[in-house]
Image 1: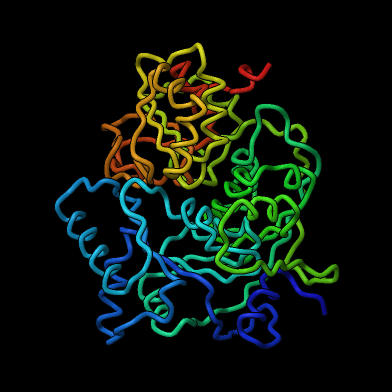
Image 2: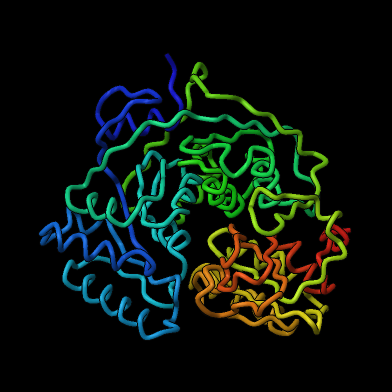
Length: 419
């Protein structure tokens, strides 16, 4: 019987033949923690009596959720992480380096065929590199660090086929929001997803990362793309820590279900408060005024996203009643945006540029909305309190829709800027 990508990767790391539903202990290629989760990882390792982690080259720490620290308590966590990194001689990406899900791929830690776990739910992002990648709790990551292995249940796989090309002004974010709106926030719980089609093949790596990043919002354990030439070419630009081992699904692989989506006429999509699967065409929301717009996060803070924003904003200004906050996903992206003049365009248009990192997304600093304020964001979540205030309202959309809305002062179809 043929195998899915998930079955193949987990079989390789268990060193035995596995199919969906099996349980197995698998070796892990890479894991990490960020400043919202690493304090618990460190405490659990000490409780376990672990003096040295299994491999200092297969783990890193990233300070991204609160960069730089907004409170005394967070500063203590950062200090703890820095001390642990020195004790263990492991890589620490400190304030200003960027978001874990951007920095780790940039640094060449992940290659096709890898099994990756992270103490962050959006670890599924690395599926864009043909890895099986999933989030785990801090204690589970500590267990992985102790011995280099953890147990996994091999998930069933949902196969998605896109038919047609995305229209002008419609992006990967719109496609994944549309899919989540269809299958629901629990529609793929503990499943793996594979997505195929002409639209995926034509997508840049930046947009593929966006697609995979939001897999968890459908409940999925992972979303793994095939390793085509575009992925391998992107990896050639990185200083890889190991050689890729690409995995493809067999033609006779067994899937839980196969879903097809005709997308050639897809409109820009918006997730309404307070659920990611509460999705609507942008045209149905055109009269909703906004107070804040946010461009960034591990979903849409990459160079291509900033480039789209700059093209729309050049020669225009942010609406006087709107604050538009921009957080590049990494230092590398920030420097490229500075070099190309993108940052200058954004600042001249009225944007506030903040430190590379998670920024307002997690609601700790850099843009917490006031009571009753309406925010449109490129982030991946919009539940109550996500941005720090349960009395605000968060809409999710593509960078183009977010920036177009910031210019008009209300939720706006961005296609008018692509004519």
